[in-house]
Image (cartoon, rainbow, N blue to C red; front, side, top):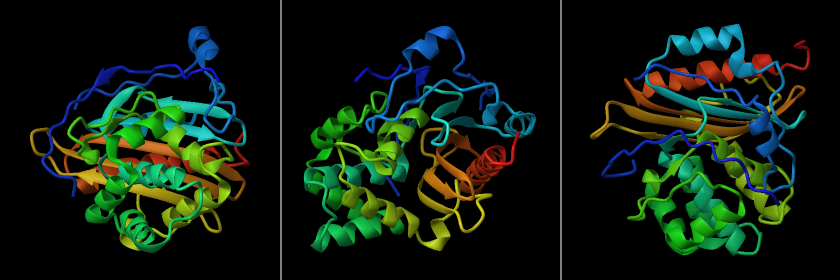
Length: 291
């Protein structure tokens, strides 16, 4: 299977002791070289070049993003069309608690694709649904730490994710496109995770505690469902907060994977507002009635 194109623009180094802006530019995957280099996800689903109607290039999105301070990078995969869209791609950001999705997926892979049981099952529920850091650490230890997670990421094609050398998983660096690759492993049949394992983790992500069900859920109307995980880190040596949200949206004529990562936010609420503004516009742009 051909490798994905590397979209690395810069590596953002952030130094944080615990896990709990510049002008924005937009890059659209439209050049012939990029189109030729695009390949497939671990599931084998093709990821094609973005056509002219790019949700990130709409007037509404451009106007909204222009009002937001801090760093913003995002990726969107429309499963219906096989199209990938990006906003400021290749920027590396701290994962914060979205790393917990990767940790659980790695352990599920190692356990042969069956749902977790016993103590690991309790830890997985706490880590995903309540963003419990101690539970996530226990799962990280069970999985074998960075060597195992690195091997899983490599198999998933997550070539842009860099694990923290000290094993502090909240410091792992990732890109929005790599988070789409991870979400695709959960969303589509593939050799890495059997269907029972995928449905198990997606079930956890659909049951996130209401107080943490913000982010890429914004704008989504029932009966559509969202399987998501959010992450956030307060500033230490950097200018502001890291606030991230990733998820899979299904229903009302839509099926898409969305990852939005923000940094240098004035506060957690500010980063949340940025993500939710983008999420609302994406939901509207992908309406089956949109022409």
